[in-house]
Length: 205
Image (cartoon, rainbow, N blue to C red; front, top):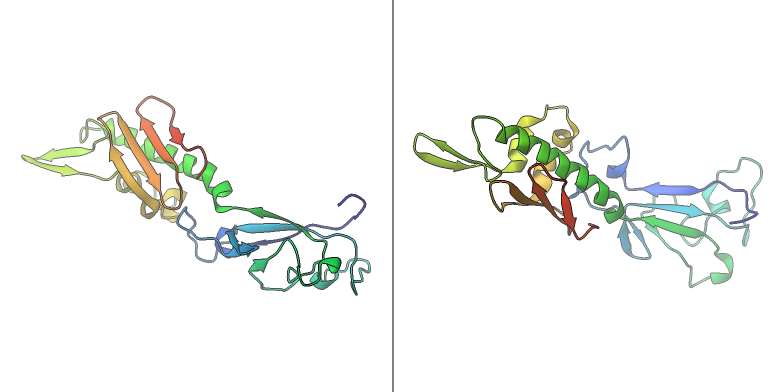
């Protein structure tokens, strides 16, 4: 709000915090908040000028003196952009951050990690292509790329600590040099081609 010198307020799904209590964050991690009934990861709220009985003395950090319509409720997971029961006393402006907005860039980073691991294994004596077929004493074994990435990265690498192996919903070898990867809760299909940049369709999760 122009002319309203007040701090932004925000709320975030606990699992998406830096100090995530569960210790695991991947594309399968669900949103924990709602905005007007729709799931969101976080909200940022700009309070307007005082309405109703609100009072804002210096350094006042009482939610009810800045926010309204239920947005001021501590511990709430439901937020709104309007209060139809009392529209004259509501002027919060609320911006949502969606699961897709976060996971669209993150899943590309994970796809790059998987391709890094795939290229490592293909360069070894064990596999000859992205189909990851290992012939051992006359028997063929097909390995999953997400599992091989788990083997490649250290136990402290974020690919493993955030359990991205379990978030890979589909891996399909198109040829010995091309594979497709998909992640839970992301509509994108990632095409990994050896020696080429990764492509995705659609561009957003």
